[in-house]
Length: 81
Image (tube, rainbow, N blue to C red; front, side, top):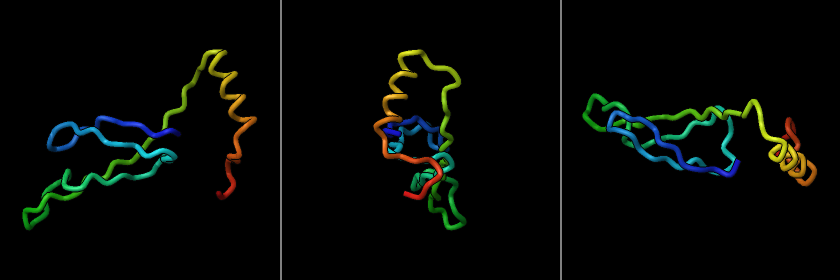
């Protein structure tokens, strides 16, 4: 929700990528020049597909904070924004 950073393996070793705030499950990010080389020798792009993991269990304090956020948020799941 707030974005962040993630270490991703590539053909050239691990790279740190920035996950933009508001990124959605299934969204693809392009890492320019980090993919397989093309037939003319240029480095191709690597595409990373985001998988958003939701915690299966949270503490009572976390639950209380999420409930407060739900009450103050204008976000309505399933509706176009």
